[in-house]
Length: 307
Image (cartoon, rainbow, N blue to C red; front, side):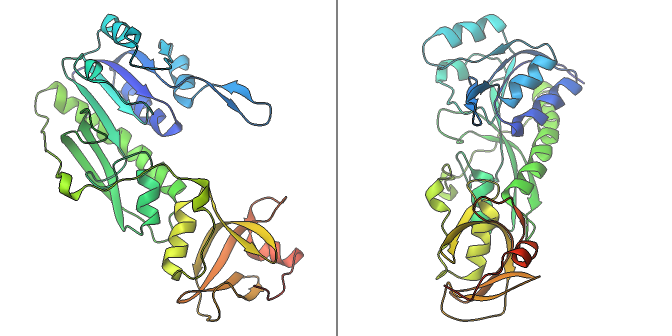
């Protein structure tokens, strides 16, 4: 196995398994770039990104620049002298002067089958759009957003009830393993370069809170995809009996009525009519309550058949 001197750039939990994989495979991690600490929870105390915590545990120098475009980051990277830069959900665009620094270039782990779902939320949009498969792409980085030549692709099916959060966990592992394999092909000179077909590109912009409210006029499949795709954030919501509930899981029902009508409540959940039938909410969170099984909630909090 060939060891490379690698500068790693990443921020959230999704990136941690990839970084851990690089440690385990014996590469020389000369430094880690991650986003600055941010206020968190009610106390608004500064909390380090997950990647910083992991890198610090391994004794790796951690850098948290506010910008990569003031010249200081370029000088720092030049002094670290990485042979390869690996980027996994870093959250900043790398300028050309950084892309051009390492002799083996810069590569990125992206959680979609490029060129589909370029952008910040590829996992969620694949679920929101009802895709049956997705995967991970390792690519050479270019100046555009997720536009570089592809090196390796690994596909996986999306389960019919799988949420974005569950798919996130599987792709995190898939990406880490594919990254380790890909770096070896780069090191031994066997890596391929496959240009992306820009005509087939789609975008995956960041999710917004205003995507949460459910429109019951929509078909059941689309509503269930919304509930799955927005779990764990920002979470689908619905006004039921004058109160806003968060909706975490659902299945298709067999009832029919005016969209938005509560058809039944019971141990199996909360059935609500939609555009082409009905949806049974099986997991929810009421205002001021914890997230729980819908049937269990309804046993202690009965609802009338209200719209």
